[in-house]
Length: 577
Image (cartoon, rainbow, N blue to C red; front, side):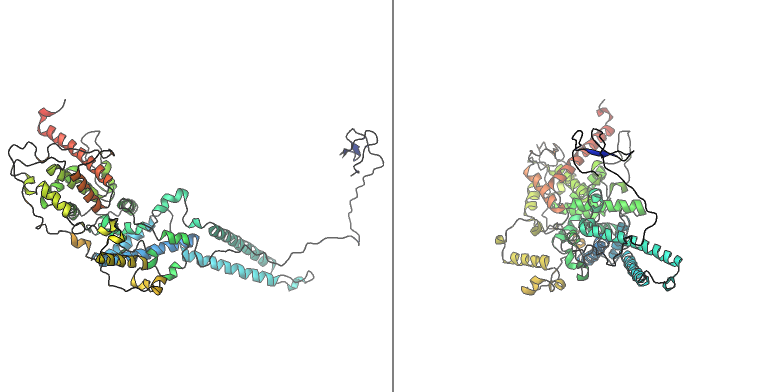
């Protein structure tokens, strides 16, 4: 290129080369004089020509070293270990409940079958972790062996004769192609593993799969236990199982304590947190998982779950509200009129008959827990007899069922003075806001025993804990209590029942002036006696009072509609035109 000097004609410093002639010209077109451009193409190089040769280095490029703990599992291997941990946790839960509730030996077999059906119905199937890991290790060993053979068969100098080379050309091509495929697979495996190490959240993916991961949590083991109890027609409610979980009798909150150390050592931080929930689930959450599990196994494998053993559950509802067999009979009749479903999922119940085109085949609250529906029937029966709105009601006929029930004053007095944990099975210590300073000596000892069990775990595991080594505590024999199944059918001879005498001149009788309270009226206040009944049911069910109020209101309006239809059927002249 010409030097950056001025054009002697115009003084311009901008030069360019003409593509056609190869001459150098300025921006104005003046040709640069005394300049020659020569091009020579050499067909043959002389003896003094220099030729560069690229030499390949034998040094192997090291990959990025991972800083993660090699003992921790990630990816599909971690997911497989997570489900293994859940299965071990389920086995411990089955063992504890079998001893706690005196369940038959068939309970374990049924739980195993239901758990197998649950894992088979997952949208993301479980990986064959041992087989895949073994194949990956074998592929890695094959790659290392091929690399060693290739380096040993490589010629040491370019002057090595061809006769010294090992193998034929076709064998070398096959070996190269096989090694290339193995290296490709190895690179994909390494890249996926590096991604798993860099993104630990891949063990539990988020986003669209969040709903799917909801059914893989430890609550699925509790749902399996519930479905197994329904299959054996064991009359339990959700609060029975959740009460044992909150008391640390059933391993759930301390799941890592019951797992062997060989399993815990390979769990990542995210997996360990997933296996250690901070709180026990609510009754509605457990019902959602149990009903969903029942629907899925019935839809996929045509396995039907039996109906609820309603008679003992209804009796427990009556006893939780200090009721009598007469109240049980009234609530049973109301449940029959209201067509309450007795299944875990509403799709498993028979559809209602449609007498008119506008009639529906089901009700809005069919998906609620069955014990909540039965309790609402008991509360409606109590309202029909007593009113519990501040106004006294007395029967007029001697054949009225209200004559066999105690008076409202005695009913409320016994309801107030009743021990919450005597018959209804409500644990006062699990729902109270007491302070440690308010406890007496016996209650403080009981609280310390509970803390020991919750923090240190079982007796076998306590010896492995740091706290137990440095601060040893005395071990006491733990009594898990009487089975829930044996609490059914308690005696009611000590209830002090007295019949309500009919009084002349009384204008208000049972069932009259019935008031329906709107559950959505958050600013409204309930009568004191009615609020006491709702709170008692709230403690027994473990559900919020708003759910009970809403369920009772829906059933009351359904009962009113049924009563209007009965009056129109029996008295056609009362039919509204």
